[in-house]
Amino acid sequence: MAAIVRISSVCHRGVKLLFYRSSLLARPLVTQQKDRDQSYLLTARIHGSSSLRAGSVSKAASLHWTGERVVSVLLLAMGPAAYYFPGPAIDYSLAAALTLHGHWGIGQVLTDYVHGEPKIKMANAGLFLLSTVTFAGLCYFNYNDVGICKAVALLWSK
Image (cartoon, rainbow, N blue to C red; front, top):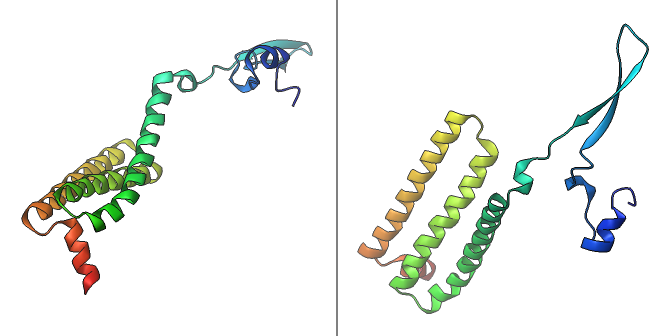
């Protein structure tokens, strides 16, 4: 552990691992030429990924993750609210939250299992179409029929 943590990091800025330091990324490399027996010391330099240092990309991913968790918690809270206070506001909120939750979930499945540029584009287009049709269908059902809350209550009553 002492080899991984610098003393200056502990004293001044807290414990920081060397894996993200540029000084760790320079490694000496010893090679021999075939026609000579002399060893040459070469230094190979490995550049750290710019995505590790890009603050805006990391911030956007963090906000997206937080948004997913907020929608999940809101869906948990909307269940009892829909039971006790059924109405158009809850119906349309459920339509939006369910569609968004499903869109993000299926998007993660596509990210994990669909490979190749044309396949990814087709899968994303299909996902956007499915999400649009789902939201439009739920809104149509809320406007022209009994709504999501009363429909679930009717299913449970029989």
